Image 1 (cartoon, one colour):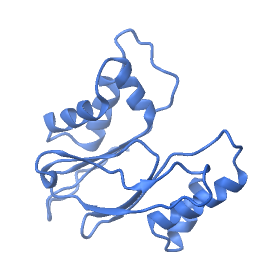
Image 2 (image 1 turned 90 degrees about the vertical axis):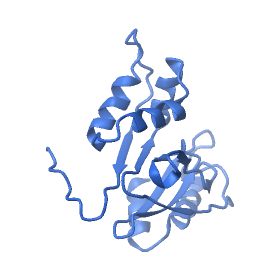
Image 3 (image 1 turned 60 degrees about the horizontal axis):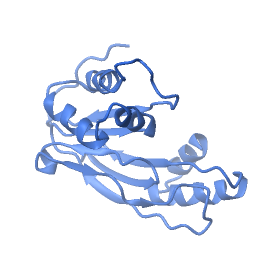
Image 4 (image 1 turned 180 degrees about the horizontal axis):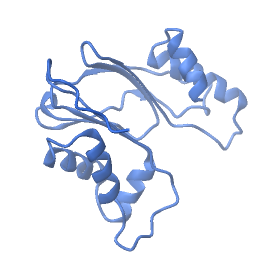
Length: 178
């Protein structure tokens, strides 16, 4: 899926077109009891705009100033991939303002938070708002460590997490630690 999506995007397909093409492919090759959730986004760094399509994936969160201090769930898109050959996919565009944070995560993180009695969306948004100066790496660490159950019994589902922060124009990028 990753290689096919990369190829489609490099060929100029927009996120919704990429999801549609992937869906057609997966409908032909996936067993009937399998499907793929998928979030496809293209970031324009010059405008901080993000065109996206969400194919049944947990809704990424845009948190911050451009949302009036609130949270926007990136839900526009369509069905999971691989179950309906004629499924239609839509896209939307959001623009990140200075200081905004985008959190993209898999259901493994949601499952961990539900297991400890938290509402995943509210908990993640609150954590990000409570740490406005935190770097993306620091937010990833806090999101992961804060979602661990006290008994250490972590669900088997994998967790993938991507955090992006938008800086004010002209603010230099902090040094990366590799």
